[in-house]
Structure formats: structure tokens, C-alpha cells
Length: 278
Image (cartoon, rainbow, N blue to C red; front, side):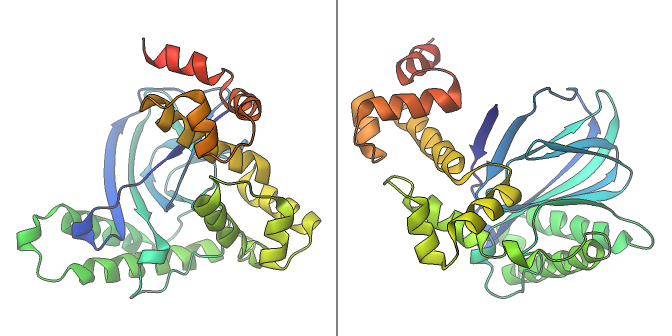
């Protein structure tokens, strides 16, 4: 199993709210087995105008060709792969919902999904292209940065309307899981128990564990270990010792840290340091 976190550095000149990228060309890499999943600390919406893709939400695979969109909420392990040497065109939009104060985020509360973009929905790609152009303009030429965020809100609303016709329903049972993930991300450097989470979010242990796994594709413990391991790699690469790293992550015993690290990466912290040092 391979899952890693990809951070998203949202630029200040865009109100710390979002970024947008446009890609067009041919895929250089085929589908990986098993897929190397990753997750972000932001929501991600991909708008595919053309091309064939394999989308992994957790380890569940879905294949789509033609216009479609993929939504991955913050913390959701996923990967998008293309058929090798296939022509494609797509927009990728990442945004941190908690920092967007002036527009509603209608996709909040929905779990990850893939759905077709059918009928007269060119407006979605029109919004995306307008956003891309505004995003790439020099800051000194921008008269109103907030207008970009309003445009993002219009795009997300249209995406929600399209998705609502294809996705079974807004997954209200999962709405609180985003808050659980955020709490974990803010506190993973100390010991967090499932019981602490059930008490804090007023939900029984069985429901929390089931909803979290259904939403993210991994267990609560697995998610915490992923975050800890990702941070551990940063500390080890910065020169921290194994003992110092274990202490920084809240492990009472160094051996527990080594075991957790090896479970996620397949190697011990010392082996990781030696590998990265060449």
C-alpha cells in the first residue's frame, strides 16, 4: 500500500483561497497497480473535457471517458491515472473551504465522487477558463481579487447542480467527518484515541469508525499513522534523530514509532534516512 500527503500552498495573491491549473497533452504514464494514492489538505475538483481516466477513490477504481468531473474532499486518499499515450484536456482546482468566507461551498458535505458532465454544460468549462486567465494575470493588473473567489463560487455551485443529478444524494451521514479529519490534522502530534473522537463529536464508536472508513477508504488509526509518518519523514530529512522524531510525534516509546513507520513505509526510520541520503 502506498498513500502519501500532498500539501497545497495556496498563494497569498489569490486570497489564500484556491489555485487552478490547466493541462492538455498525452499521458506519459500508464495505470499503476497497485495505485500510489495521495491526499491533500484541500478540496480538489478535476474537470475533464476530453480523455480517458482511471480514478481511484480509496482503492475503488472507476473508469471514465469524455467530459466528467472528479471531486476529492480534503483528506480523501485518491489518484487519477490516464491510459498511456491518450490525448486529454482537463482543469484542476484546489481550494481550502475554511478560507473562502464570501461564497458558499455547496460541495461541502459530499463524499468523493466521479460523474459525467452531460448536456449543455459548457458553462462549467467557461467558468474554469475565466478563472485560469484571472489566476495567471500579474497581480498589478488585478482590480478586484475577490471577484476571482466569486467566480470560484459560481463554478462550484454549477458543479454541485450537475453532481446532484448523478450522485445518489448529499451524504449527510458523512458531513461531520470533515471536522473529524481537521481535528486529527491539528492534533496528530499527540496521542489521539477513537474514544476521544467519539466524545468530542457525540457519535458512537462503531458509527464513527464505519463512517470514517467509508468516507476515506482507510481507518482512523491508518489516517493518523499516515499523517504522523509524513511529518516524521520531514523531521528525519531535516536531521532529527529517530528518538527526537518519536518524541515530537507524541510516541511514548521509540519502538512503537519504528513499528508504525515501518507499517506505512515498509522500512524503518533509519533505513529511510540511509535511502534518502543516497
